Length: 250
Image (cartoon, rainbow, N blue to C red; front, side, top):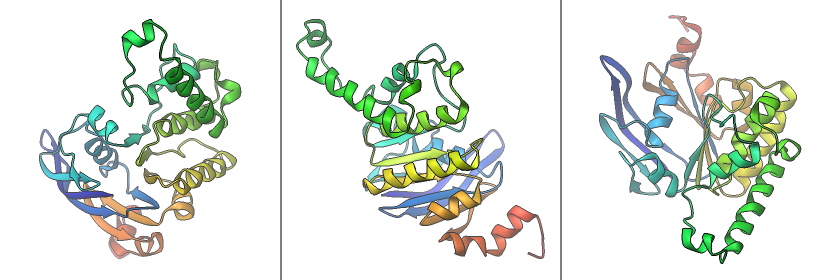
């Protein structure tokens, strides 16, 4: 599904990623872990076209997407959430949900003006309602973000990324700031999305959350891959323990 080969990214004199290489399984839930500053979000930005790597390649479904613009990557079937909420404050959640679909289809402007493509807009509206319901935010749909609890907004971001029926869904710290009940609800939704045949790659710091979901784990530290495998395998890796605990004798 996703092949990361020898990715290198530098910002000025700082090497954010160096020789990052791994292959994500064709199905299931994968996780990208590592201490703060390890390069996890930078790698997400490379995959989704927000950052162009200095070296290396990204292949999705066998196609080289290195250097593609973010909208091109989206059209190929890759959708994502962001570490910080990326919701337009002046719009309601329902209106914000349309942003998860813009560019995926291109309805004729002329047909819209002549009102002969009502079927398209009806289908889109139905899809929005389905996604709002799927992530349990329907009752907040016509409210602006400032009036909505943080946990609801996190669910909304998941629903908006799911809106386009992606082949690959990237989740950047989806459980950050959630309480235990909200995390359990989120985990259920992530499992349901995966059961629909959508591959998931997530960045997350909550190891309990990762252990309950991830089939495959990649650990980064200082921009380099230091371990890959199952959660149990990565958890016992000495380099991983050293990265998290700072113990030279770990």
